[in-house]
Structure formats: structure tokens, C-alpha cells
Image (tube, rainbow, N blue to C red; front, top):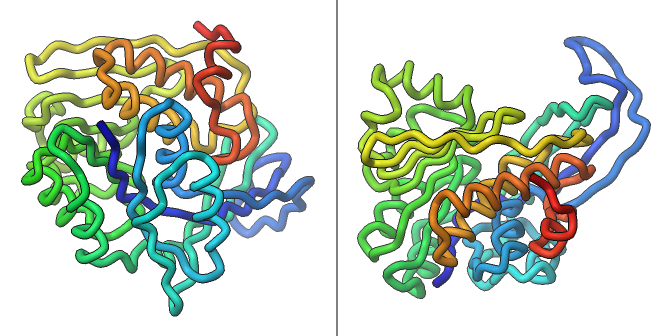
Amino acid sequence: MAVWNLGSINVDNVYRVPHLPAPGETLGASDFSQGLGGKGANMSVAIARAAARVAHIGAVGVDGKWTVERLMEYGVDTRWIEVLKDTATGHANIAVADDGENQIVLFSGSNKAITDEMIGGALAEASPGDTFLTQNETNGQRVAAEMAKRLGLKVVYAAAPFDSIAVQQVLDFVDLLVLNEVEAEQLEENLDKPLAALGVDDIVVTLGAKGCRWLNAAGQETHVPAVSVTPVDTTGAGDTFTGYLVAGLDRGMPMRQALGLATQAGALMVTRLGTADVIPDLKEIEDAKLG
């Protein structure tokens, strides 16, 4: 099987600060680093690190060619990433505080220049039973989700950054919805119905230090506890969790087992400073003996 990920690719500019800046505050950074990021790229790397096959559908500017090379080095199939001459690569300026919390300013750039033709060309290579994954940092989600569903793929939607309208546009095609606790509350409020009434087969709500909960089509709810660690940087932890979850399911794991693996991966990720470049692989998770 394989995962087809329509997702963002960003250049992450990471600044280490004593605390998150307040409005109007000028704050000196103690460290700076630049690396590969974007929710889509993070998830593709996590899927590859979790030993599943993943093809990334996306776009970068000429300035971002190195990000494609980096994805390839990490085991991601990059044949469906377009290099656009007239659009800058997306990027994020990330402030990471000493307590591990973060603040992000995001520029979409080429992530919002993906065409239906790019998506169709990639998914034409997919097989029934493969998995399609997308988030909300690119355009084309509804077209891609509908196309993937028609082709017999399992559709997974990670509802971040959260936008209620974007979620509603793809909801009819989604088999697995992944969102955090705040996003879940916002969605229930905006749709005026509980998550269990959305008609989605499986919904996973991440709860940070409290773990996650899984709601299935039968209305059953399962809580998966978190792994206790000391956080250094929470950036990319949710993406790592989702990537490992999708990879586990694509490899045939039962949902509960895949959630356990994803929880361990996310926990190890928050002990590291950085994003895609520091996502752990399966051996590192095994060696860490978390949980």
C-alpha cells in the first residue's frame, strides 16, 4: 500500500526565545536555525520514518529546491512536487520559548499554487486501498479528496490550521478525521452537532499531555493515555503523531495499536528542537522505550 499526501512544504526559520513575544515587544533570540517544515512535509517525513511508502503532492519555488532534495533523502517519493518559477516557497517564522511553547507566522507561497492537474496526475498512479492524506495549508483539498474517494482510496484529513468551512467542504469524503481538542470544540460549535454525529467512520482528537481519544462509527470512544516526557519544543509533534498514525494504518495495524505508536512518536518528538529534520524513526522510538 502507499500514502498519497497533498501537503505543504515550508522553510522553517526557528528562533529560540526566553518567552513568547507579547504584542509590541521586541525580543532578542538566543539561537537561530533553518530547516524543512510545513505540516504536509512533516507528515510525509513521519510516514517515511514509520516505514510506510509515501508520495508527496505539492509545490515549491526555485528557492525551495533544497527542500525537495531533503524530502527525497528522508525516503519520500518527490516525483509529484512541482518547482514553480514565479512563486516563492512557503515559509514559517517560528519562535520557540524556553518552556517549549511556540508561536508561528506562516506565509503560504507556492503551497497555494497547486493545480488540479498536478493533483490528478499524481493520484492517477494511486491504487484502490491506498491512503490519501491532506491538511489545510494548501489549496485543492476538496478536489483531491473527492478524486481520491472516487478512486477507492481511504481519505484522511488533518484539520489544521483549523478552518470550519474547509472542514465542511471535505467532510463528505473523509474516512478518518484528526484534530486537536480546541479544533474539535470549534467544529462542534460551528456545525451545532457533536463529533459522533458527523458521519465520519473514525475521529481522533489529540489532547496534548492527556493523550488522545478515538471515536469510531459504532459510537464507541477509546482514550489513549499520553507518554510522560519533559517537553523541549512542541513544534511538529501533532504532525508526527498524524504521520505515524496514518503509516501504521496503511501498514495494516489495528487502530488502537497505530494510536499507541503515534503517541510514542509524538512524545519523543517534543523532546527535540526542530521540525521535519528531527522526526524520530521506528528504531529511535523502540530504543527510547517510552510508555
